Amino acid sequence: MYRHLLNMTDSTGIIQFADRSRPLKESGYTVDDNARALIVALGMETEEREKLVNIYARFLDEAQDSKGMWQNLKVNGKFLPVINSEDSIGRGVLAASFALDCGIPETEKMARIMLKRALPRAMQLNSPRAIAYTLLGVVNLINYRWEPFLLKKAKNMARKLIKLYAINRTQNWLWFEDKLTYCNALLPHSLFSFYRVSGDSVALKVARDTLNFLTDSLFKKGYLNIVGNRGWWQKQSFIPPFDQQPVDAASIVLACLEAFIVTGQMEYISKAQTAYEWYWGKNINGIPLYNEKTQGCHDALVPDGVNLNQGAEAVISFLMAHQVLNDVIEKKRQRLIPAV
Image (tube, rainbow, N blue to C red; front, side):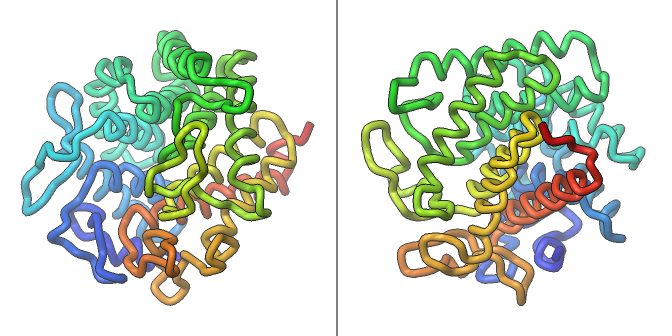
C-alpha cells in the first residue's frame, strides 16, 4: 500500500512530481505535500512509520521561519517564495496539530514549536480553505487541551466561513463562494469538526446544507463527478468535467466521514464509500486512478483517460482517504461510533 509513498520520499521529504512513477527530484519539495504526507505517516502501522514521520516533520520545521510563515517550495537545497500561500500555513498547522500527540518525542517537540510560531499568524488568515485547514487543526488542539482560549479563536474562524456562506448563498446555490474550485468539501468538513467541540447549531446547519449541496451536485450520475479544474464551476454555469484530481475525491471522503461521526447518519458513510470508489474506476472515464502495480495514484482524470504521472499529491490523497475510511468503518464495527 505504501510502496510509492516510500519511492517518492528521500531524506529531505516527499518529492513533488513524478514522470509516471519515477520521482522528479528536480521538481523539489513542498510544504503542502509534506504536511499531508506527515498526516498519512502518522496513520501508518508499519515499521517505516517513525522514520517517515520524522522526515516530513523535519521538512516542515526547516521550512518555517521565525515569524511562523512557511516557505512552500524547496528546490536544489533552497527555499523559494514563488508558490507561498495561506493554504500552506493552514496545512502546516493541521499537520502539526496531528503530530503533537504522536508518541515520538522529537516530532512532538517540533510540532509544539511550529504551532507556537504559526498560530498567531494563522488566526488572521482570510482564504476560505486556509481558514478551514486551520480550524481543523485548532479543533485537534482543543481536543488535546492545548489552550483554553482556542475555542474562542475557533469560533471566530467558523464565523468567517458562515459569513461567507450568508453572503454568497441563494436558493439554488448553497455555497461559501461564487464558484467551486479545489478541495471544496474541506469547508463543510471544518464546520462539522467545529460543531463537535462547540455544539454550535448554526455551524452544523451550514455544514449540512453545503455538503449536501456539493454531494447532490457531484453524485447525480451515481458516481463521483469531481469539479474539473479547466475553468472550475462558476455560479450559474455548468460543471466542467475535466481535469478531475485525486485531492478533491479525498476531501469529499473525509468530509462525509466527519459528517457521519457528527450526525450518525448512514447516508454519509455511503457517500464516502462512493467517493472512495472514484479511485478504483467508478468515475466518468471508468478507469482506476490507483495503480496496483506501483501502489501509486495517477495525477488526474483527463478527457482521454488518466494522466499517467503519479506525483506526491495524488498518492497522499488516496492514502489519506483509504486510511480514514477504514478507520471509521472499523470503529463503527466495534461500535465506538454509535449510530443515531
